[in-house]
Structure formats: C-alpha cells, structure tokens
Length: 417
Length: 219
Image (cartoon, rainbow over all chains, first blue to last red):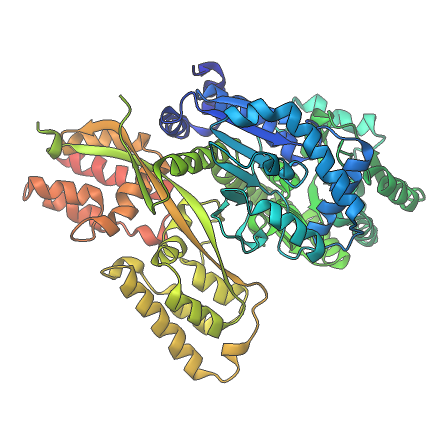
C-alpha cells in the first residue's frame, strides 16, 4: 500500500517525474520482502541512509525491514579494526578476533534466522554482519553485500579473510568503481545519498541558524569555517586545524570542528580528546562533540557556515560533503574517495591535498563572495539531480528488478495493469 | 488508432556494474579496450548522462576526461573529445575508432604509452531497465503536451538510447514521425538538429519542447 503523503513531500522537492518513475519501478516489486541488516541504528552515514530509505521503499509498496545486529564492546572493537583495515590501515588481526567476530554473528543469526529465511532480498551492510551468510548455505533469495567503505587498498590479511565471506553473496554494491576489489559476482555501483526531508537537511528558520553563534560561543562578526565529521583519523582533524590557523594569519575567521561518535566506533572519544587538547589555546577554534541525534544542530551549523571543509585523507563517500552542498555551500575537500565525485574544482568547491592547499582555498572562498555564492548554487543543483534519496532508491529498485528479470544488458518491463 | 501506430512512452533507469578492469597507463587502456564488453563503450560515451556525475562542460566522454585529468595528455584528450558516438553504425565501429585514435597517439610518443596516470581508468558497464509507462500518444501534436512531464529516464530512452535501436539510428520521435511522412518531415528535421551530445537531459527536454511548441504554434 503506497503512502501518498510521504511521496507528495518528496515530490515537492524533486518533481513529479522522479516520483512517477519510482512508482513505476516499485509497482513491479510490490509486496516484495526486503531486509536490510547493519550494525547501528544511530550515527554515521549508513544508519542515516537506512532511516530514510526504509520508509520511502515502504511508501512505494514494498515490505521492508531494517534489523540491527548487537554486540559487546569487544565485537565492535574488532569490527572497527576491520573497518580501518579495509581502508588500508594495518591492524592487529588474530584468531581471537576472528572468533569474537564469528561468534557474535552466530548469536545474531539465531535472532534473525526467520527474517533472513523469509526475505525476497537481503541487503547486508558493511563487514559487521557479513558473516551471517555463512549460517544459511541454502538461500531462497539474493543476498547482496552493500560495502560503504573504500576497499581500493585494503590491509590484505583482513581483506583475504573477509573476501572469503563476501564471495558467498550473489552481488555486492559499492559507492564508486574505485572502491571495488576483484570478486566473481556482479559489483553494482550505487552512490549513497542524503534525504532532503530529514532534520539534518530541511530548511531552517533564520533565527535557528544564527542561534548557533550564541549556543556555541561563536563570534557573529567572523566568517565561519566548518568541518562536520566523526572524530576519526582519516578525517584529518589535525590537518583541518592547521589549515584554519594558516588562513587566520591573513584574515579573521573561526573554525568549528563538529563531530560525534557512533555506537560502532569506540575510537571517537579518544581522538576527540587529542584534538581538543590541540585546540585549547586558540579561542577561534571550537571543537564540538555532538550527540548522534544532533541533526538539527548540524543542519544549522552547515547553514551558518561560510565555507565547509571535508579534508579527509581517506573517505567512503563523504555524505557531509553532500549535505553542505545541498545547503548551497561550496566544499573544500580532500582529493579522495567519493569527495572526488562531488567536488569539482571551481564548480562545486575545491579538492586539496594538504593543509596548505586547504588554507589557500579558505582564503579564496572567503575573499570572493560572488564566486562562493555561484558555486554554492551549482553544488545544490548537482546534489538535487544526483545525490538525493530518491535517486538512491531508484537504483536499488532497478537492481532488484534486474535480479528478478535475469541479468541481461537490457531488461524490458511491461506496462502495469 | 492501432496500438502499433501509437507512440509508446517508456522510461528507463540504469544500473552501473564495475567490470573490475582498470588501466593505469595508455598501453593498458588500449589493451583492455580491445577486449572489454561493448557495453562499456555505451556506458562511457552515453550513460554518463544518466548516472550520478558532474556534467562537466569540457568533456563529452569518460576517455577524454581521463586523458585530460589523470593522464595529463591534452592532445589525446582533445582528439578523444571529438569522437561523436552517434556517427557510428554500432558500438563495435565506435570501438574501432577509439582504438585508432589511441594507437595514433601511442605512435607519436615513446614515453606516453608508459606514463602512469594519477588515477586509473575504471571500465564500467550498465544494465538498462526499460519500463513501459502505459502512456500512449496518438498524434504528434499531443507529444508537445507530454514532453514537459517526461522523466530524465524517458528522455534518455527515447532521444539517446533510441539511436542504438532504430534502423536509421535516429531518436524515437523522428522514427515515429516517419509513419506520417511527408506531413511532419519538417518537424523531424528540426528535431534532428538537436545534438544530444552537448546537452544535459534537462536541456534536451527543454529543446524538444521548444521545437514542438514552435512547430505547432506556426501551424
């Protein structure tokens, strides 16, 4: 049963042609049982996408469930180390780690067995729940591994182990071709997305936007440079602070680094303390540790910012870049991962390789007001056409239809009755 | 009117699939180009209009963009950029032309074939899911009303993908108008003047509408 009220709200943003197409695709999949499994309901891009994707797919008439596996601190330490390893960081990897990982998946499988057995499509997100597949060798539907991580240069010992698990899936999905690894099944390319209707992305009243100055002790007369990202070494918080300090020598500005942790990321707090220590003697550097539900605050900060940074050294896709661009902010981003797909020099922002490069672009964008506005508009339009949840759901529906219809190059679907 | 004579409005969506094949240097690109599925050419020349990517005004195919941005060979980039895929009978002919251009450039330089690009070229192919929307158009004048509501997928299917399917490698609108010939030959000629290679799908939709509106406004 379609939820027209929700579809109408999306239609107001993306247009009726986009929604009509989704309805057409979904009609052929109506009542299909779709199960998503990941490892956190709060914090991080994956949870945010699922929070939007599940209701939208349901609104289109599919039966969708989102299940989250649980685990103790030890399990999440292991999976965080897997995550780092897949992004190329050497980690300790022992038989004990494997045992913790597999045992936890076994316990979770027992809880989810009936749902996993009854589904028509199973999407398993990232490595944490990937091992579930090993407990169901006889499967009645496609299992698809959705990898949100940049796998281009993984730490091999961990990838060799995980690859043997991933091989069992019927297909995998990556955000970009650059992130893939040789695998014997189809590797679909589906970039992630943001949801224009969530608290993090909706339009806000002006007083709420400017309220962030009071709330966080910011100076309303100084330009605001912002990076929103987890406290994670790959987001280069140290490089961000260095870039801001270099730019400050030429013009007044203030930096806000706003981050948080996720339930499946035990490293965040430690890095937060390191960064806070570094910033404590600089009154114009503000380090904010925000709770995972602070979406509206992040939204207000992004809208209050003059320039947004995402100076990552490794990045999955970089949804914070997408969010800032949606709010008409040009982005200075690290030349890595999905940031490259979104930030186009002189059009939607600038790609940089060093704190020095970031400092120069901060100065450029703060100096050229008109240029900044023009790039911001272009960035917004680019996101509207390519990186909203409606496009993301369209890609998933198309993939599912491809599975239903067989894997030819051209799949013809007849008119609905 | 008979069903077969009606214009069947279709929509489509593309699914991109990584082939796992990549090239860091020109000689590698050339080698892979001889072997990859022909669907990769479709993806890198045409499907770029329907996939999430910045519509870069400078480059009209992924090979030219890679030669410029990652290999930093401006000469090759310009030559590749000039290749217009709709000028070829089929994708195999397009492949041949691409190989010719690359071989010619390789012959001109001793070190270029081995120069390492900043980032590799990834060969990607696509699956196209075509949906019959159920909408039917009986008369060319009705198309004028329908065009503004067409999705980007519909525009792609009828105006770009059609060139792979129709006998004369034209868009579906012109192919359909042939049935009314010579009544709408002038309209077909005006549609033929829209070059899909330099326009975004939104711009194509706008230009199609402008042509239909002007034509039926004059009648």
